[in-house]
Amino acid sequence: MSDVLQLIGNTPVVEITRIDTGSCQLFVKLENQNPGGSIKDRIALSMIEAAEREGKIKPGGLLVEATAGNTGLALALIAARKGYRLLLVIPDKMSQEKIFHLKALGAEVVMTRSDVERGHPEYYQDLAERLAREHPDSFYVNQFANPANPKAHEEGTGPEIWAQLGQRLDAVVCGIGSGGTLTGLSRFFGRVAPEVKLVLADPEGSILADRVKTGGLGKAGAWLVEGIGEDFVPPLCDLSRIREAITVSDAESFAAARLLLREEGLFGGSSSGTLLAAALRYCRSRDRPERVVTFICDSGNKYLSKMYNDYWMADQGFLERPRYGDLRDVISRPYAAKAVVTLSPDDTLLTALGRFKLYDVSQLPVVRDDRIVGIVDESDVLLAVYGYEKRFREPVSRYMTTRLQTLSPAAPIQALLDIFEAGRVPIVCEGERFLGLITRIDLLNYLRRRMPN
Image 1 (tube, rainbow, N blue to C red):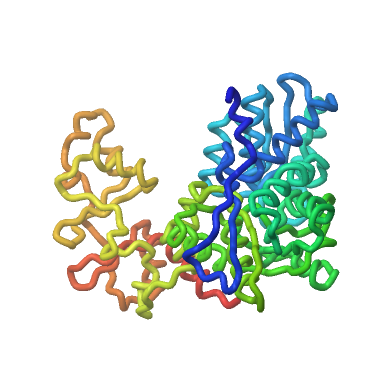
Image 2 (image 1 turned 90 degrees about the horizontal axis):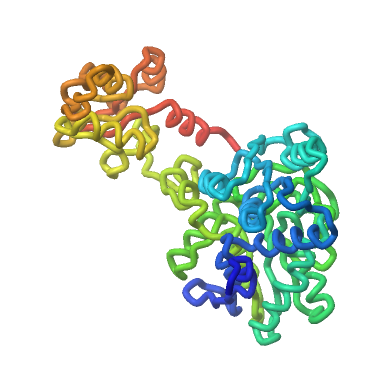
């Protein structure tokens, strides 16, 4: 094989065996095995090759697209391989891993707001379309209305599934981002096996499940799952063959993805969690055995800073922590849980600098025998070494701040605000035992978790 693009498609299917699927057999198609790491490799290749055949792309030309992530990654891979430039407009809820990946592939990334609806000038699709108009020689890929999108699934994904399951299949569970997967599979199975049911897995906050159930268009909410769910019905999306629609919360999606990794060893992204949660609900509700398939849409390595990060999950309110009814509930990184990055008094300023950079923090507690003895921040290090670079090898104990503002767990919340106002960091101690620091974002997350639904 001479080209990485030849690896797109023909992904394996694996049966779920360690998670309760009721009376059904549940299979997952591992789209994370595509070279770009997601199911979107299929449509990106299909759309670009269709545009090449139709003469819509010039050699070295500019591609423009709006994407929640994986379509952008797929386009970036193919653009890099074929020598095209790529401009992507991305909503700001995308994980940092995806953004770094895109930039590493050479894509230009424009971030925009994820809290606005269609018609707003910063809505990601409207912004991408406007940017494409401003570059008259560009090609606007427009996955949401591009007929080569569903064609990739009608001619590729659907026939693969049908062959891999021995032409014995009762239901397919899939989500809707652009609508290409659902529409392509609907066309294929409508022609080849119309008895196969299509089941929609939709994030809570998306309007698509309600559209299927009621025919109406409710008001969209917000959700953290990436890549699926919409606040409109994409132009190429055919909902006519959906037999059932299942709404899945962010919490259930993330829990299902983490369960999939822990029990089956399959590392899927956030939308994979939504699909798995919906598929499990579907399977467990059946009164007779069925053979059901869904997708691992992309790889979990794009979400390590989010749903696979216990601290992020807790900050978002998806993991329960012990509750004390005092300032311990505000500490997001408890020292006792080994969640705090610290220094010892004998560590050097060079070590401090390394930890600032590695953990993306600007200050570190200095701890000896579970007691906090000081704090060193970037300003302390800068003032110490400016003009005296040899001091990088001196211990932090010489330059750390030892005038510490400590609070007992029983102190009121207002005490935190007073310390912040003074430009200091609240330090919570029980007697001499260090419990943790509280930052402004810790307090904001705590207050948000208390916000009524």
